[in-house]
Image (cartoon, rainbow, N blue to C red; front, side):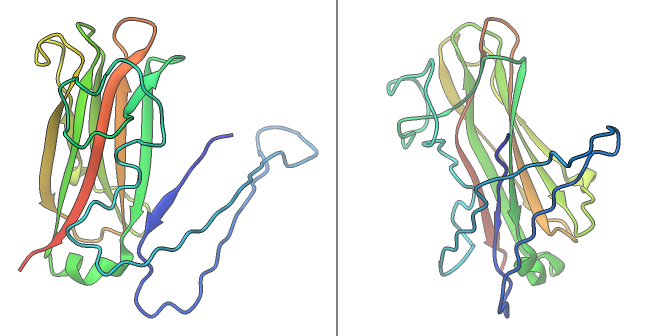
Length: 212
C-alpha cells in the first residue's frame, strides 16, 4: 500500500466539504471480489492569513525522513535541519510527487498576476554519478498538463560538487499559466552506480507571489 496526499486552499464561500473515496474492481481479472483497499483517510485544516510569500510545499525539508551520506557539516543549506531526501535501495530511480491545489487563486491566474519561485538544494554522494532533479507541472480542471510550462531543475554532477557529498541550490521563477487548478511538484533521485540511489534533495520550496 502506498501513501498519497494533496493539499490546497479552500475557496472563498465554501460552507461544507465532501470527502469521497472510490474503490475500483479490476476489469482485467475474473476475481469475484473487489480487492481494492484504503485506510487512514485524513483531512487536516490549517488557518493562515495569506497563501502568498511563504513556502507552501509540505515537508520540503524532509524532516519526516532519514539520513545517509551527508552530515551537518557537508556543503548545503544553512537551515537544513536534521534530514533530507535520498532514493535509497531497491530501484534505479525514486520519485516523490506532491500536488498543491490552487483553485481559490483563479482570479490572480486569470489576470496573470500570480508568480512562483520553485527551488531546492540538490546533490549526491562523493564521486558517484547519482543525481537528483526537480520538475514542476501545471494542470487544469480536466487533468490536462500544460506541457509548454514544464520546468526542470537538474542537480549537479560529481564534478560540479567537487567530488564531495554536498547540496547546491537550484531555482526557477515564472508566472502560473492560465487555466491552472493545481500544481504538481516532482523530485527525482536517479541511480548511476553503487547499491543506493544517492541523488539527494533538501529544502524544496514553492512560493507564490502576487504581482503588482
